[in-house]
Length: 511
Image (cartoon, rainbow, N blue to C red):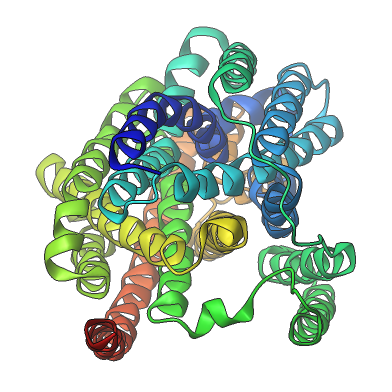
């Protein structure tokens, strides 16, 4: 292809980026849109404490096991075909969620929504490798899509707050179908028909990978008996082991394991997992704290979280130039450091959390650090493979993304719930039904307090707010510790990554 033709192809690719970004944005939004809407949903459908966690977590935990099968399926049978099918599934599942009459139906439709998201995400990111072969332009496109994904996760509570306050929690799903319909029309019109790949698609490997990720995801996110979680985790690890063994013996493999031996790839996968765990998990706790403890309306609470959205957008804009100047390893480590410092604000406790200035600084820094770490990690993964295998690399990145979202929701949610239950002091004389309801969560404590005498109700609400604040404080402190560990690991791996890259450049110069 001549230089002029390549330039024209890139010029046509930028409008396509808007189409891809629209679908990616909705998929990211639906991971967190229920954070602010959950109290309204709880009042209507009355789910238990475990069901509340799963209503939020089942979406990413369903998507995660299917990302690698669907991502590689796009490489084999055509990315546009898989993308449009994913749009259709996502739109239908959104309608099912919006009109779900009870909790089981809502859980089923949220799982189907995860299936649609698993078809959309890896294909969208692998198309960037195809549409933008030039690294500089690809980094800009990756930054845009990473920013869309990250800000979409943050924008979910904001959008949920506006829709819940105007029409109720069901409206959070009714926004998807018209946008999805437009995306389908534009994708069919604008996206090129890429020919099917020559590499065969190994259904056995796909099933082993999906089962392994599902087992591990269920083990980490299972809020029930530990024996079930251990059994699921062991099963998942065995299936992953069989998958890896098959990849070494199959030619060509479904996923080229040489990807993980390339500089920075393992650190990038860990970075995506950690960033999304913190962003989504703490996002749920922040949304709950702002409404229950500070007494803000859903819209006002969402407005506070807009600081994360704005900082993440700014970070996505500046990251490509930083990557070109300092390299992926340094930018990723810097993102971890900014996030760790920012988490010291909520970890400091009530004095910092009630200060608009300190809380605003913490949320802003968190958004900026997440954008730096996420964009640099995504660029590392997509640049580590060829265009015809980009679906597998994108699926690895998005598996970390969805596992992180699911793990963050369940792990940080379960941690905060345990701290809340352990620190809640229920006033003497409160009936057992009200006591049990209050122990289920801070939103339920408000409902329990409404049936109590004024004095007991005030004591109940004060105790619930204090316990909720402690839960957020402990969770933020744990997240801060994880980021401090990530800084040390990333710095160590980053120095090795830079040495390997320098050696590759010297070899290329000799050739």
